[in-house]
Amino acid sequence: MEMDETRECVSEKKTVVVVGGGVAGALLAKLIQNYVHVTLIDPKEYFEMPWANLRSKIEPMVAERSLMNHSAYLTNGEIIESWAKNLTEAEVLTSDGHIVPYDYLVIASGHVVNLPRSRRSRLDQFQQDNARIKSARSILIIGGGPTGVELAGEIASESPEKNISLVHSGPRLLDFIGQKSSRKALQWLQSKKVQVFLNQSIDLQALEEAKGEYETSAGKRISADLHLVCVDRPMGSEWLQESFLNDQVDESGRLKVDDNLRVVGHKNIFAIGDITNVPELKQGFSAQQHAMVVAKNLKILTRKGKEKRLNKYRPLPKMAVFSMGKKNALKQGVIKSRDLFLFKTRRLMGLDRHSKRSVTSASDEISEGLAD
Ligand SMILES: Cc1cc2nc3c(=O)[nH]c(=O)nc-3n(C[C@H](O)[C@H](O)[C@H](O)COP(=O)(O)OP(=O)(O)OC[C@H]3O[C@@H](n4cnc5c(N)ncnc54)[C@H](O)[C@@H]3O)c2cc1C
Image (tube, rainbow, N blue to C red; front, side, top):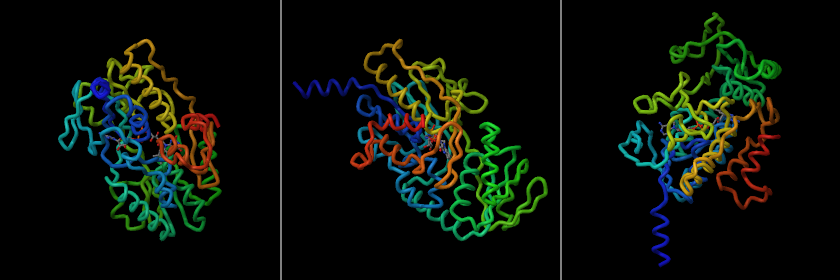
């Protein structure tokens, strides 16, 4: 009798497919795994915390904690290591030929980065980057967005003897945040002897032939043993171009969502994280908040089905945090944790449960982090 009941229960579970195992998709899949059948589609076997990437190049041991296999937190779901390449109103198609049916779909394909497929290879990549950075006496960083600024900050803090140049095509660094914060970032980098060249670019196609001698669009010559390209990563919405959702992709490649984080006009399709057009800064902690709201909404829809009770997402006030080495953070609203939120994020993903540091609940911790 009990077994029959269990079987009945199991067969009633709805199927949810999550596309993208980044900050938003990985957390969502973890949160819903016990009340739906969840399938996570991601091209790599691991989840990584992008905000720890740069420190991982300087201190590769950081990556040991910031990369976790999907199977470590998703113990009750299916993982398909592949790219989603198209979809119908009932199925997702992957580049390796899987056809994955869904009752509900969650699109969390944020940005596309071609990373190694295995965690081990990604760890090796950090080691190699570390060796290249260590042995270079002069480094050219191309791009003055969050990645370039953070990387310059991390290297300048760790190795003040290196000559670091940063070339940015815009008139100010971090141009999506306030003027004051941009200015602070510039002053801080200059105080660390980083040479910053604004309103200039480097021809990315000519990098291979540069052989250590680079020229900016304004004719400034820069010698460097190593160049690091930190320009924006493309949005992960190209795979939707041939699909019925194409009309809901805006001109910047983001999916239009309603207050409940459903793709406009589609009751069983949600989008979360950077891929959404929610008017707020695209940050990891907002991606986590999206995942929490959609997890609650999926619970309501798959258990009781009452549309009216769906949770609304309120965009977070604009705030951004940039790490500048272990001791400093440029803040516009909050202070970035010195441990890069590694502990908080691992707890949120259900790991390190027996660690001695006391916490109330992992999601409270994330909210605390937001309110700091
Ligand atoms: C260097 C750096 C530093 C940052 N620092 C901070 C910080 O300090 N604080 C903060 O809050 N935020 C920070 N951010 C921003 C934060 O990392 C992003 O907002 C967050 O990663 C967004 O999460 P996401 O899940 O929406 O997208 P992503 O993390 O980009 O994940 C998208 C996932 O989808 C997968 N994917 C893409 N296309 C497909 C496809 N077709 N099929 C299947 N899978 C696909 C990708 O492989 C990836 O796994 C930083 C980002 C970077 C790059």
